[in-house]
Length: 433
Image 1 (cartoon, one colour):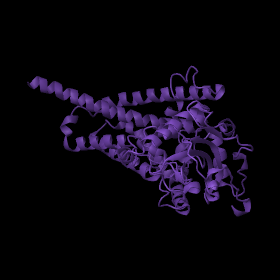
Image 2 (cartoon, helix red, strand yellow; image 1 turned 90 degrees about the vertical axis):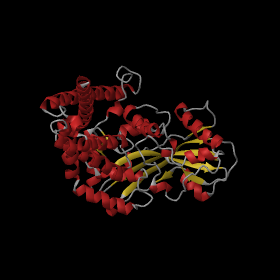
Image 3 (cartoon, rainbow, N blue to C red; image 1 turned 135 degrees about the vertical axis):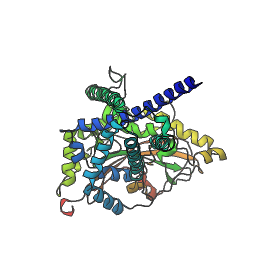
Image 4 (cartoon, one colour; image 1 turned 180 degrees about the horizontal axis):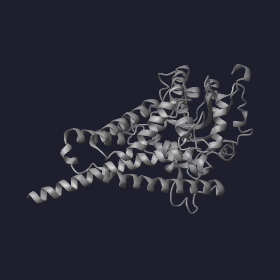
């Protein structure tokens, strides 16, 4: 019996060591990528403008119900003053996670710091890494009240395997990421040698936060001709794919039929839905524009946007938009059931991204769709925004396409037509900047 208990204790220790080692290797890998993407290993800490991420989260709808544009600019201004501290803290915590297993006190301190990091990210951006938070808190609880289970877990002999795994993971990410992205940008296809092995966007562990963002919004037209904004969080469990598809389009050149303007916009700046960029030269350009008092942002626009598409059935083009058409058609079919309307009040699990993609610059006056009216059509808009420190500029608000979900007849007022049609957004003059 004693021997069996010893064997059981060894297995528990091995399990806990594996969990802690895996956590450490995961975070160290992210820190190493941040050290890799700049001209120097410390460039991300000194040069990344994390305040842009906060502004872009607001433009994606996070906090837009109680924050004004002026408030978010003030918050971003404050974080611009402490960004060196914030970025350095993030980088150091990630790198030091490789020493999670050196001592119990070190592990508890780092796990608490990582929990605070994830909670801070959630408050500022709407990204809730709940699985990391739960795991970190459970490990802190075990370390506090069941420390005997960790006997034989801590020590320098366990740090070296953790660091080795982190370096191995970093090498894999760096190699595959570089080769896959180069391949996609050279061939504009998603089924070549490296592309068939891995999704390069899923390996973006480090990026630069940019003041320029490109995104989509979804506006519902009901059978009465009323407009309702549709949060992407209501598309769960497909919402992550819907949000990530924009990053796939811009970085990888995939799903270009969904938005025919992607090819032209990629030539200007490849920017993901959070405003993230990975090209250091484009980052320098965006930051220079952000700092300049006299700047012309018109080059970020496409002179002649492509004609919007329309889908009326499952056999229409572009085929990339057909799943969306089927999704909204399914809502029309099931919205009559009370249980469906109840479930759709909060379907967002287990997704991490709680930003709604309801842009406050264009959809603030449009109510949220509550599944209480039949959908006639869904209009998808392309938005481009730029944060200039003093203002948030709406560069483009253009209709990409329309999903005719039901052949219900409806009429839209002229006031509502402004929200549905493409709009030319005037740029501020340099003297006003």
